[in-house]
Amino acid sequence: MKLKTQYSQTKFQSLSPDRQIKALDRLISALETCLGDQSESSRLISHILELRELVETPIPEKIQVFLRELHPGLSPHQLMNKLYFYHGAALRKDSQLSLRSGDGSIAGDPHLRQKAAQICIICDNLRSVFNVGSLFRTAECLGVGEVLLCGISPTPQHSNMEKTAMGTQSLVAWRHFASTAEAIADCRQRGYKVCALETLNGAQSIYEAEFMLPLALLIGNESLGIEPALLDLCDEFFYLPQLGWKNSLNVGVAAAISLYHIVFGA
Image (cartoon, rainbow, N blue to C red; front, side, top):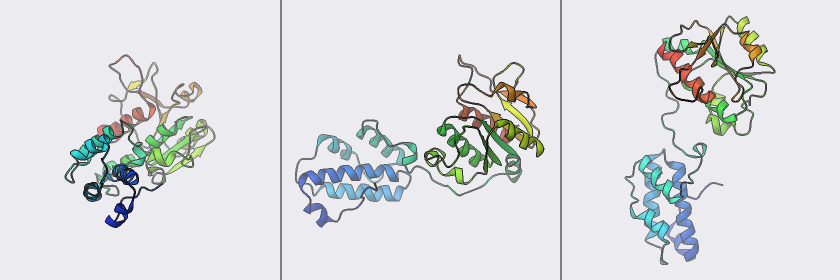
């Protein structure tokens, strides 16, 4: 439900004292949706402070504390921190917050963009729509050519993909394959070198490897990794070196680190 962000003075004064307090609380909650818009958040803060002066009943301590240091000059990060404590650490999910700025401005070295366009990601039966959404965001930010979703990997039709991919699922080319082996075969037919990102004996540190394009990066299931039979279909194996006790990272994080290195660092 869309939160109301404006009350006329007449309308607000016509509300009962209890409804006035609830209206202030709703307006404060609405601040979460405009954190990325300095002009709108400043307007809304000024409006909240104006309405506060019209409240004749005692304002609850929780709202008083929040309003005490509220002013239109707060930065988005300062306002976000205040809202965090106001809601008892129960801020909205990232996908519900308006935090993005600068979307639509594409810049960068044309050579790097051409390089990234020759890379595709093969997802071997990923389970998590969060991880796949994260991969779409990484792929869009880098200009990766294509995402190949295999087996049970959720596709952009998934009801939660819009939230996790933050809209990037409509900006990146993707296809679904019934099996990962089919996706690998498709890449080979198009001349791609297939490389697996996996922690196994014989794998090479991604920071010591040389990459030949076009390249398909195969990543595996969150719990089981890449299906062993598929490793026989790969040309090379890369791993991310670890300095800690745990021997692997979240698949979306690992893929992002690897792809950024392939594009910018190699």
